[in-house]
Length: 174
Image (cartoon, rainbow, N blue to C red; front, top):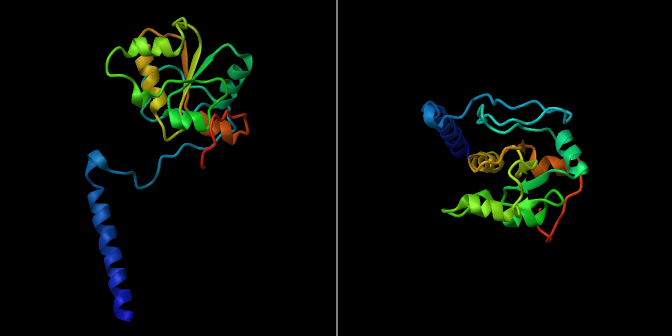
């Protein structure tokens, strides 16, 4: 029994050393100490680390809620349809980024938005911080001439965590 325990400890040490050595490769390395954003009260927007200077502005939960209550902006959910149906910001339009057609993407987006003017206020979101579909969809829409977009990077998860209403079209497991 003692031999098995000592072998296990040796294997864990070797595995840890190999993992640390493997992490030295820069292209796929993981920070040893995470660069996590500090939690806020909702006043500041969540901005992903891969945001670029020309991206649409990122908005906080407070701004997203205010825009939703005002009713002028169209909210666009960039997640898969199944996630959209399980729970989304009420009144949102589903444009699943990962399922955009290979050709005529601009026509597809225009159709999904019902011919909405390209300068109409739109707010694009997905699941939250671990999801960058909203950022990619917004970049594509910029390329198609949409000019008045904002990205709510906190997404449906932050919306739900703040206790705001979620529209559920089907019952789903958590």
